[in-house]
Image 1 (cartoon, each protein chain N blue to C red):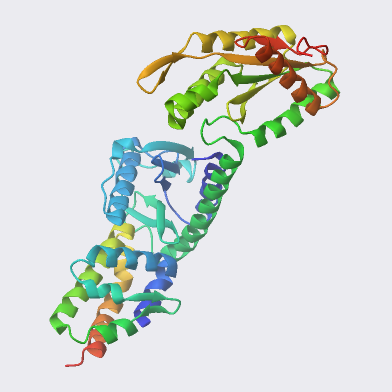
Image 2 (image 1 turned 180 degrees about the vertical axis):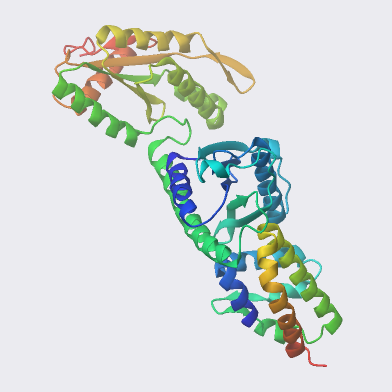
Length: 323
Length: 106
């Protein structure tokens, strides 16, 4: 469940006590599955478990398919919804509930429910009101779910799950601005898999894609938290290393190079060794005047690494040997 | 139409249409004629059913409708325990009988 969706649920939970008398408000989200509970502070654990079981039962009735209660992840937000003297009895059980499907265009993607430890806690008017809230919530949640998936598509590369080039450009603008105006260090590392065409030609594109995913995973785990790893295109990757000088970025780049060199990649029914070439550019060392300059310089350094025999790290040189 | 209005006033049209559709999907193998019930902007449309079901036996239609109502009430009961049933039982059953009489006069 994305952050935005959680916020919507929390906002609904904050407002519902003004409209209904309940001890627990539940939102069940089939993806996960997750049960988000916004409930009275004094709700005993047994009550919580009954709410969980009940929503699983309702879901099974609606969808005609069983759901394993143990698989449902619980996220509980405890709030004081009633005065202290009206604390819920520790032995309280679930006595009444109103549950409605969250659905848009015939697709049910969850349920919402109001729960109480009191019998007949809800009447027809509550149901009418709750169904209006349910419809609004369904539309809003679906909208945000779609928005989240569009945002994901716009940010991540679908094959490798790394950031995509579009996101890289955005991120680089931000980091370059910070570096240029704050006179802080910023390094770019451009990476290319050596002889990757051979992998595709020999083993096919499916196996080639597998290698790209494995190398992406190695890159992701080899950088610092503040770094950005993106797929630049084809078999090219790029790293943004904020606040990294030439020494630090060279160290990171060489660590990645050695890691790839020492990894055996399973391709088809065989194991192969692969290498990568890396080019580094840095602000302020290379006197880049724009983010475009930095990219060009890293690309030039990568070209030098290729020209120099591959499987190596090259730092941008304004007077390249390859000329 | 009156049934539709009574029920949708309580749960909202979208949810009722969804529940009706779920019910029809569950029962369609046993009572295929139920898929002729169409949910329109005005509520449930009987027109297609009226045309196509003349050859069916009234008892078959009665059983189909009974199952439809039972299943819907089962869903209502699972969703809101007594709240929907308390409101609807007295109103819906006479209307269903009336609808059956209109569709298949003896």
